[in-house]
Length: 250
Image (cartoon, rainbow, N blue to C red):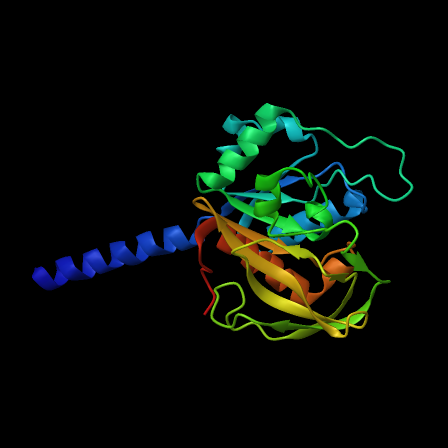
C-alpha cells in the first residue's frame, strides 16, 4: 500500500513538474516607431518566439496602450521601439505620457522581464530609469557603427543561464561600437569590431528592482535575425528575463 502511494505521489509530482515546464511565457512586443524597418523586424521577432513553442506573443504598436492593467497580463515586455529622430529627420520625437512612463518603470521594477532589441535604447536620453532598464544605450557623439558586415561573436559569461553552453558564432549584422553600458550591467557576449579593433559588448543583462533586463544589440534587420546565433540569444534571453532560468538549458 505504501509503495503504491509513493508511486502515485511520484507520478503526480512528475505531472506537476511537466505542467510548470510546459507553461508558456507571455510576451508583449512594443513596436510602431523605429528608425529601422520595424514593419519587417517585428513580425520576424514574433515568428522566432512563437515557433520556438515557448512563448505566447502579442504586439502593441501604440505605447499608450501599455497601461498597468494591460502590462499585468505579461511576463516580459520586449521593445522593438525607439523615438530616434536623429540625422536628417524633421519628424518630432514620439512623446510618452507621465502615466505610461510610470507604468513602464513599475512593470520592470516590480518583477516584469524586459528585453531590448538593437536600436530600442536610442531613446529618452534624459530619462534615467529608461536608460538603466536599457542596459546599453546609444551615446550621442560617441557611439557609432559602420556598414553591416560579417563578424565574430564570443561568449564572455560562460556560466550565466543565457549563455551557458552556447557556442561562439559568426554572423552578419550592424555592429554598434562604444555604446554607453550602464552601471551594474553584466556583459554576456562581445562582437569583434573592425572599426575599433576591439571586442564590443553585444548582449548584456542587469537587475532593475525585482525585474530582469536583457539587451541584444544585434538585429538590425529581419534578414540578420535569421542568424542561428541571434535566435538562440533572443530565445534564451527572453526566457531568462521572465523566469531567471532556461527550462531546457544546461
